[in-house]
Amino acid sequence: VPGRLGAAGTEAVERNAAFLEAAVAEHFYPVKDKEGEEMADDVPVPPHKAVLDMEKVRSTLKQLVRDWAEDGAVERAASFSRILGSLEAAFPAGARGDRAADVVRGDGGGDDIGAWRHRAKVSVLVPGAGLGRLTWEVVRRGFRVQGNEFSYFALLASNFVLNATANEAWTVYPYCHDVNNVMREADQLRAVKVPDVDPRDIGPVEEEDEAVPSSPETDRYSMCAGDFLEIYGGCEHVNGWTVVATCFFIDTAHNVVDYIRLIHRILVPGGLWLNQGPLLYHYADMGSEQSVELTAEELLRVIASEGFEILETDTIQSTYTGNRRSILQNVYNCIFFKARKRPIEPSE
Image 1 (cartoon, rainbow, N blue to C red):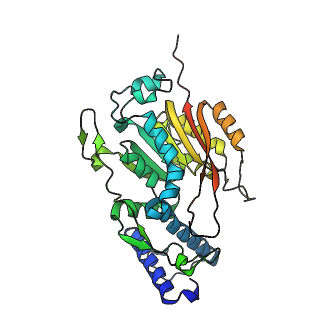
Image 2 (tube, helix red, strand yellow):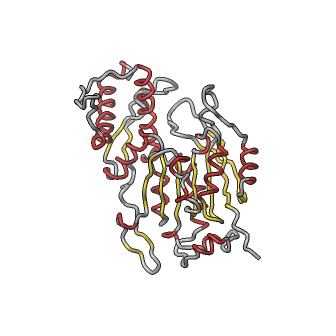
Image 3 (tube, one colour):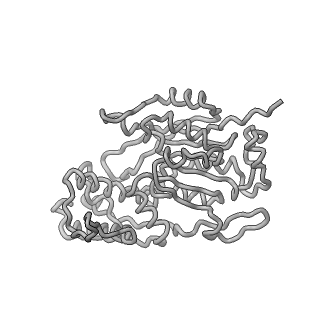
């Protein structure tokens, strides 16, 4: 923290530390040596590792704003609204009936996929779930949802927020470490309360005839840790999901075609893929890593060639963990598309 921030800067760091310590408290286990003896808490960390980890911690604090603070509401609206709106339009609230068998056979084709089943029976997968706000918004609308996330930092933070916090229970200072493009000292010391909602309130589940309170037994909301390709590549996920929703995710692939093929494999015939995000390929500048970078035009052609019907495309401006008071504002022209896995043609 810049020394000129004085006691206020020190307090900001201490408040951040209190939140972070609480978030990892239940996941802390003593480190043991090869003889099984507990090692000291001050085991040295390689300098390059420490720097990288600190960058991830600072990024996680800013993701808290994006996902779980009132300050992130505008960014969330830009990033999530089209996905959530498309999901709600495809499956109108209060729809009845269950045509799951018809969906798998492909008889439930066409754009009227909302007739398949009511929301409580629609399974939505959100790869790259981050700190979990999009998954929470999906389950609040009555759907079954599972988030998938690879980042250990994001998993720890999302688990804490979703399971152990209440409305505005914590105050963090996500910008106290910023030294570039700062307009005012007060902007660095801006306090942000999280979360802006009660994450435990995921609403009732709508069954066939009546709404009943949610409970762990309803299995409506879950998170799965690990690499998307590894976790969902098994046979148990084939034709297993009604909707896949990807937000700021597909450019995390070494080869985006692998993601496209897996999403096609795990969707039910006629199922939807909703996407919004940039094409900032994460491995593009890493010479030692494989990276396949498609243009948006090429991406849509490949998606169509892999068994999808592109129903809708658009570009939507959005930031990502943006600081609205910063001198620098990075805005993406995000690629939005709605695609449908082509139904199986009925046999003669």
